[in-house]
Amino acid sequence: MSLSVVALSIVLALQAPSASGTLQAPIPGRPGSPSPAGVEGTAWTLVDLPEHVLDGDRVPTLTFAGGRVQGSDGCNRYTSAYTSGGDGAFRLSGPLAGTRMACRGSGGQRAGAFRTALRDARRIRIDGPRLTLLDDKGVVLVAFEEQAQELAGTTWDVTGYNNGKQAVVSVIIGTTLTLEFGADGGVSGSAGCNRFTGTYSQTNGVVAISGVAATRKMCVEPEKVMEQEAQYLQALTMGMHRRMEGARLELRDADGALALSATRAAGR
Image (cartoon, rainbow, N blue to C red; front, side):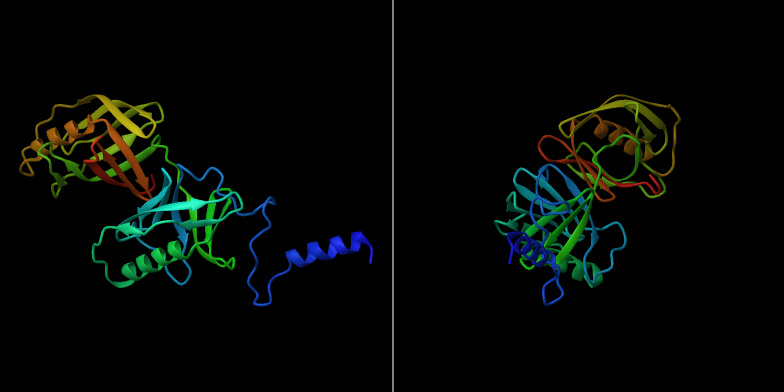
């Protein structure tokens, strides 16, 4: 048999499916092959968890930062160290730690399945805006879509804010607090009674809002709405570290204290 025929036979064998029908991991160095290159500092949102339906705004997320994976399983926060290699090897290198809030029903089952997938992952594959984790046999465990971390052009409905008394409180029923980041560096929104405007800048994940000014309408209802407005506008002036995961946004101060939490406004 000639050398060219032998080489062709090897290539065909490498490309063929296994006897079990499971496709083998792509050959390193070819399009679609596993590659963790550039994964550090990226954020992803779950789009496929076999045998589980994704719904609501509590979709699991995955962020790579400082040699650790972290995010939400849709119920609790989690974090763990990880290792990866240029050949697409990937695995958690430490315990999967996190909060322990009870989560029942399908949400709890999905969260458990998601954590199991993270623990069982042995390979990572990035194809454009899609990241896939596979087990040691090449079976897909979970798939994500890359999440843009740019604030410009986004609008958020605030769900909680720091009241300046070392407490995060919910928005008063019957009022709405919003936050809109313009592409021109302007920030605006509703403070519950008045509209406000200002400017913002971003440097290495830190968001600074300044020059906040509001209209001067006086509202007497609901009770304490003006107190809420003053506290919210003050919270906006804190130098804040941004965390965007799925449809959720958190801004925290340098000590990690929560300044505000929000969900993405419908269609924005």
